[in-house]
Length: 336
Image (cartoon, rainbow, N blue to C red):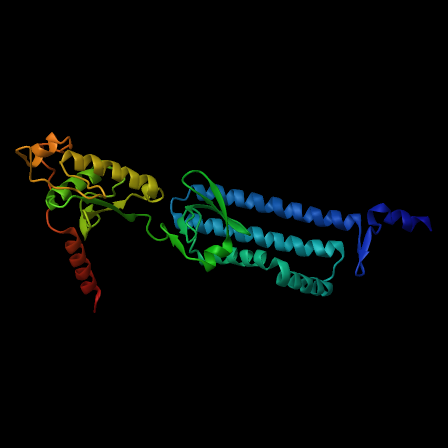
């Protein structure tokens, strides 16, 4: 009579019984062991895929490898969960009741977590967002996608700040993916000069500034730097320096724009072009018997003089008009 009791022992004794299911130390230990094994196998697989991904140069392949790793991770955890239920002693028929309880919980308090989980799966399968993409959210957050997890996506900003964004925000909100198809991006740097400035001189100075910045993609061809006269402002002629950026510079828009502004100020000063201030100017034709620049200097107003240097060669003409004509011609070629 004592043999059966010894065979069961404390390892198989019931700790607690809920809904007709007995929880024993052996069942709980087996469930925990299954999860540990599944997590370890998943970690080894993802680590191997990560090393293989580092040897792949194409971004699309690296994104596909990452997606495979996440899917394998979720599948292993799901299988471990089902096996753990069997070890604990929860049959499949009773799991339906358990799933119903989960559904009630989702309806009351877990709907946000469930929404983020489904959104994460959509991001992995849809591939509209991949690890390594540089994105800008509707909330103003922008940075590089470093990881897509079960609840949130980790974004690393250019200031090395990691931000966790719920996955549902990528699905329901507006997201600008700067590197989705083409890693190159066109950037417009606005600037203004005083009325009366020569347009060709302004263009030559802006192109010189673009050449001085190492982030400019090309100096010739369809993606060469361009200068557009975009607006007649209240006190200035407003231009845009339009440049295509290299792949590395695309992910650093703020610093790149500051670099172009720096070189623009240097080039405009070199060519004697005035950047107007937002103020009312009193123009004097004569003062103390002097006229023009001499009168201004007598009143203590600094006068910016043009440095006599040969300007860099310029293609001349209106870049905006040429760009539109080129696009119209390309569209006409595509029409049947």
